[in-house]
Image (tube, rainbow, N blue to C red; front, side, top):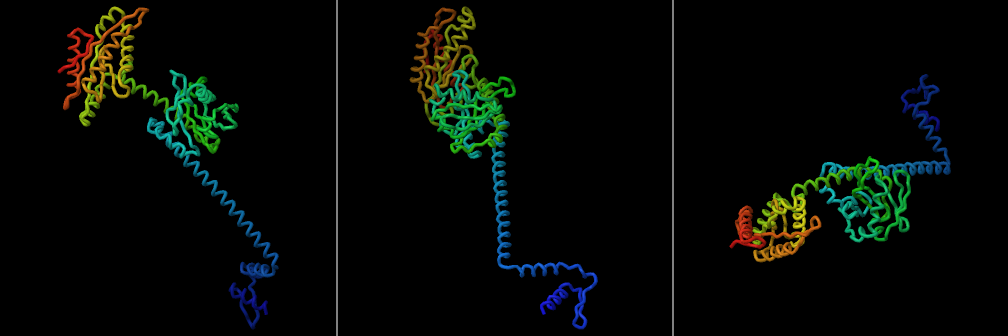
Length: 427
């Protein structure tokens, strides 16, 4: 009975058999060649013939295959996420590097605090070498750095650190020491104070900022330290950021040169004071501030007496020395970050005194005059003295900067016509 049912099903599904007198016939084409339905039914028969243990084993095998595939997919997804994260970090760092190369250094380094968000770190700081004091000082930092750390014996840590290699390197903290492998496979061990360790963290990437990196003797002008308290920085981060170090070095050098050029454009090369051009800009700004805030503003013009005679009898080198010393004296006597001294031209100087009434301005300039009168200058093992004549004027509302300068200039000539070495004002 079962065989007849099976035969009928095969005939109905295949559509290739015919029945005559209740008998089943099969075409010659199908003899000895079972079709797909026959194989499926055969597989179904085998499956039905299996006992419980065999079915359990098969199900377990299928489950194991599924779990293995699931793990592989999970691992692949993790790898893709990690690669995507690395790519995004690289793009962000490349963006910074692009801006650095485009001479947008100042705008990017001001936002150095964004670096920790790009990397797994908490600390980033740029240090620049101060040639005059031979120390590395903080230039930009995500964290306030105690000045004591860069002074005295602690300051030597930065010297040793940035001079280890001209190439970026990774270092790790181990029992009061930082250790690391340099690009030439040289292993170093550098003792570090608790204060530096707490500031930098467990791992750090160090970028020495050098000029002529490809030369035999590159010059270290600064360095960048990126630190991680959790010790998450790796060699992969170092590789990704290696190119960034070159961009940073180039940008810092360019920024330093640009700063020097800007400084040269607004300062007098001999005295270091602002030049006449910058003085006019500062005076216009001070007048605008005085007009808006209705606050007092005074200026003075100072002229060294008989200075031409000094140049003619002692030489221009002596005159240059006196001009430099007088500029230093002005810095000593003025209010820091308030008054603005400038060299107006030749032996004439101007002091802009914001928030200062005429009487106060006269008092300060009298102090400058008397201090200069008492001071003696050494040149060619000889002492010599010099005096100055000063004119003072207070800003009058609606007055232009040129009108104010003309009034103070007239006050100066009043001092000269009255015997020099005095302070005068115009009523």
